[in-house]
Image 1 (cartoon, helix red, strand yellow):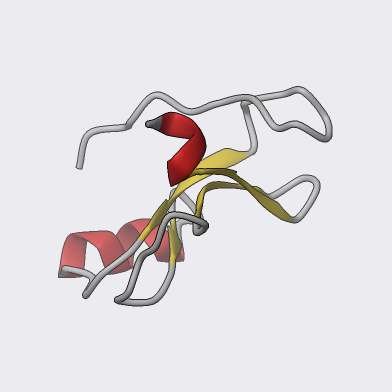
Image 2 (cartoon, one colour):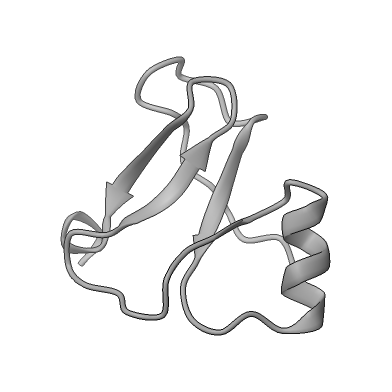
Length: 69
């Protein structure tokens, strides 16, 4: 799995604890990445207001699909 470019956290301004949020049915590779805290797994349904990133330091999800478009 290739590491996507991440945004900085709006709370702490850092990128080192920010990981992407993956929607949909996870593969074995995605499950392993989630166990290593490299991604956050979410539900199968994604909408315009679902967050794209999660900060492990601040424990917040942020940057929504509508803002990226």
